[in-house]
Every structure is written in C-alpha cells, then in structure tokens.
Image (cartoon, rainbow, N blue to C red; front, side, top):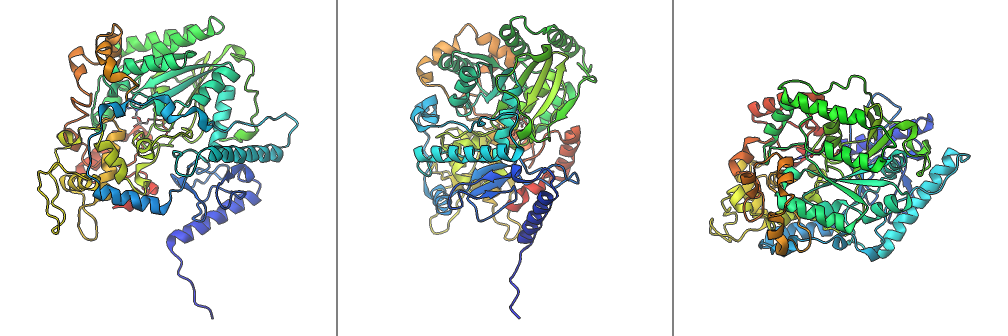
Amino acid sequence: MPRKKPFSNKQKKKQLQVKREKKRGETGSSHSSRNASVERGPGRDRQSDTSDSETTDIRRINQQPGTRDSRYDPNRFRLHFEKENKEEVEKRKKISREKILKPVADKELEIDMNQIYPEDKGLDFPRRPSWHYNMQREELLRKEEKSFLEYLEALHSKNPPGTLSHFEHNLETWRQLWRVIEMSDVILLIVDIRHPVLQFPPALYHYITGELKKYIILVINKVDLCPAPLVLAWKHYLSKQFPHLHCICFTSHPGQPYSTLLQKKRMRKKVGWNQAGGPIHIMRACQEITAGRVDLSSWEKKIQRDAVAMGTEGEQADDGSESVLMEHHSDVAMEMNSPTQELYKDGVLTLGCIGFPNVGKSSVLNSLVGRKVVSVSRTPGHTKYFQTYYLTPTVKLCDCPGLVFPSRVDKQLQILAGIYPVSQLQEPYSSVGYLCERTNFLSVLKLTHPDHSPETPRDPNSQDWTAWDVCEAWAERRGYKTAKAARNDVYRAANSLLRLAIDGRLCLCLRPPGYAQSKDEWESHSDLGEIIALQGRKEEEEECGDREDDEGESSSELEEDNDRDADDDEDADGDDEDDTVKADKKGLTLNMFSVLGENECE
Ligand SMILES: Nc1nc2c(ncn2[C@@H]2O[C@H](COP(=O)(O)OP(=O)(O)OP(=O)(O)O)[C@@H](O)[C@H]2O)c(=O)[nH]1
C-alpha cells in the first residue's frame, strides 16, 4: 500500500474551501465564472475562483470567515495582488539587516505626479467593455474577462517585471468601481493628504471628466495629519494639474492631532461623527455643480441642524431613522446602466465615494451622515460591497470598495500608505527602513541601539542604524518576545511601527514639487486660517507635524495604546471602546480578526 502523504491543516482547509466553492458553482448560486479572477503568468489563460492557490502568482489577501448565507462569498472582493518574487523578498530582508539608514534630503519627499503615473507607461485602469441589453450573462462575463486579460497584457508590455506597484487583480472589485461610476452623477474621489499623488490616477480623472463628462470632487482627507501650509500647497498643486477638479479639504477627526487610537475612539464615541470638518464644502461644491437642477435645500438644512446639535452637548445630530443602508450583494455584472445615463434621475443627486483602500471613504460617508452607517477599519480592503445610503431624500451616497490602481510608486511607500494589510506582509523591514530614512524616528521613538551581535559589538549610542536594528530596539522597548525562544520579536515590532505610520502617529507626509522653495509663501498664505480652523487647531499648535519639528506623538503617547496594534475593525458592533479597554486591562493584543493571520507573526 502506498504511504500516505503528510497533509497539513492548512492544505486541508484549502481543499475544503475549493470543494465548497465547486459545490456552490454546481448548484447555480452566485458562484460561477462570474467569480473568476484572471491571472497572469504561466497560467495566463487560466481562470480561478476566489479560493487560495499556491500555484498561481497572485496573492489573495484578507481571507474572511465563511457565512451561512450561501448566496454570496465574503471573499469575492478580497484584495488580489501579484505575488512577490521569493529571491527579491530575501534580498530586501538582507539589505534591511545590513544597510545603514541615511536620512534622505528633504527634496526627495517632493513627488511629482509624473513620477508615480508616467504618461508613457500606459498606466490605465480596466474599463468595462461595450455591452447591450440583449447580451446573455455568460457572454458578457466572458467579454469582460477577455478585456481584463488584454488590459493586463498591455500594461505588462509597457512595464517590465518589477517596475509596477502592487495593484488590484480582482476583476470583481473593478466591476464594483464600474457600477459605482455608472450610477453616480458626481464622483467624490478621496485621497489621503499625506500622499495624495499616489492615490490620484490621472487616467481615472480623464475618463470621468473627459469621456463621461461627469464632475469629480477631490476630497483631500485626513488634513488633521499634516501641517496646514502643506495642505494648502497640495490643494493648489492638484487644482493646477487638474483644472476640472473641485478640491475640498476634509477631516473626520478635527482637533485631535496625533491623538492615540484609544483617545480617537473615545472622542468619537462621545461626540459622534458629526463634528467632521468639510461636509459644508462638499455640499457647496455640489450646489455649484448641479446649478439648481437638484434641490439640495434638505442637505443644507441637515448640515445646519447638525451644527446646532453639535453645540448642544450630548445631543444626537440626526438619527437618520428614515434612511436605509443598502448593501449590494447582487450580481453587479448584470446591473447594467449606461455610464452616460440621465443625470440626477428623479431629482436625486447620486454621489459615489471612490478611492484607494484606507483613504477614509467610509469615514467621509459616516461624517456626511453624522453617525456611523458603514463600518470603518484600519485594515485596507475592509469595504467589501458597494453600499448606498440616502443622506436626504434628494441626495444618495454610494461607498465603493477601495481599489489600488497600477502605478510606478515604490512598494515600500505603498505599504506605508496603507494599501496592504500589515499583518500579511511577507517582509515589513524595508518599509520600516523607508519610513525611518524620511522621519525623525529616533527622537520620537526614543530607542536605544541594540548591541545585538557579540561578534560585531556596537556602541549602544551609535547612530548607525539598520532597519532591523530599529525593529529590534522597538521590540525591546515594547517587550515583544517570540513565544518559543523569548527572543525579541522583530517581525511584530516592524508591524507595530508600520501601523503607527499608517495611523499617522509616526507621520510621513510627501510634498508637492517645489515645496521647499515656496514654503514661506504657504506659511503666510491668506487661506491658512481656514485650513487651521478646519483642522480644529489653534494657530500656535500649527508648528508641529513637520518633519524637522515633530513627526507625531511622543514615545510615551505611542505606548499608551498598549499593544493595540492589530489590524482591527475600529468600530465593530459599535462597541469598540469596551473591547479596547478590556484588551488594555489584560495587557493583551486583542485581534478581533485573528482570521487575518495577525497572530501568525507571533
Ligand atoms: N486621522 C484621521 N484618520 C482618519 C480620517 N478618516 C479616516 N481615518 C482613519 O483611516 C482608516 C481607514 O478609514 P476607512 O473610512 O475605513 O477607510 P476606507 O477608505 O473606507 O477603507 P477601505 O474599506 O479599505 O476601502 C481608519 O483607521 C480611520 O479611523 C481622518 O480624517 N483623520
């Protein structure tokens, strides 16, 4: 009898998952070829379902637990990124151990749009191929898949291996974008003020404003995380580059610069979502765009009501009891609308929130509504389905899952911008190195150099740091130890540092080209007061946050969160604070999404 092959639990799980997927396909439920994502590489023509497969060159991230509801697959819109070459990963690890970190010149933080999205590299995004109402479902799906393959081929023909950033390979998620763009009259494109050029694909701008002739309101979000002069400089740079944009600055957390996660949650619980800075500016931009074709007076009144309620402590701004949140689990592929359909249908303005993962789309939506209607998380790719919500009888909001467009940005910077779930990174150290070379990490983290090798003893006060040293010193400071050998858990420390950066607590802000020369001009600009007021700061506080001043919180404030550094849902069940406190009391890292594999690093 042949010997049985060893079969790991992981393999078993995968086998069961594949079986389940197959079964669903056979029963004719929503999981058939529509679920397919197309893969590049040796198996280029092959199509796969959403199950994990080690044989492909696409990595599927954010495995979600299955639900009893067999109508939809929670993993259908998982992030799909190209797998990284093993040797490349090992090489980067080695460099992180050996390369001495050197602060980069300020000039290097100035990033031009053309560096990220060079015009001649064909950095387009997948478009929905033409269709007509008489098409059969299967025919349409095949056509979309074929067109997606052609898109990938064209992209790779202009960009040699290793030059492209991580980008979304899940066709299902692109379909969600198509649908949201089709049904929206005005697009709210949301970017993070710390790195707006990364998240603003010019191809999308040209498609929406040029081909579809629709308007884009660029919501420059999280302005609480950047110094006001830099916010102004970015706003002017983007408006100049893209003249058809309506640029709006926004924050869901005004008045709380660099507050800890715990403070942020407590504050939100106390004051709710209706204290955001910016909804009125979005409303005014919409008034300008619609030019009286939609009656927006109900929205204006709502904002006034919210402002009054905010002044009356403890009062809930708007219970929104008449509004309904709809999750669209349906077959998006079959919901066909012409992208140039009649605008403002039935006198309703539909606003579509789109953007990269983690830029704060759901938070903007909650802030516009004035309370939590969609869930917010630090984990990128949290929003799974597009969701619609009536803000008022004449204003409909639509939240789209985050999408990563192809670009030529460094993967290290992409990770710091929060597009990749940190707990699932194969190699976090090079991103830590990237961060440290661009921030004043030593003064913020107050680290002591580890004297980590008896063969090459180093001066503990040495300024020669490698990325690995930083992680080791942070592990030592936070008491992160490996379970087996009780050595410093460097991987966990690296994850923790990256999360601090993504949350904006160790702040890395890019700058528009020429910022260093024109800094004085921005610091005395007449619009500065408006931005500072939006941030909820006082003028004298404004100095902080710049690289040469302070990159974030003090080391003790960073520690206040006490290990709360997992990829967690910020407001799961709306009862986040209690969970946090419980976790803090126990001194444990509570990973509500242990399924994400966070604990694997321990
Ligand atoms: N400091 C600060 N943080 C913010 C702001 N808006 C959102 N965040 C944080 O950014 C993270 C992501 O927010 P979400 O609203 O879930 O982002 P999203 O774009 O919907 O993310 P996906 O679901 O991945 O597409 C959360 O940790 C939020 O607390 C803001 O204005 N300021």
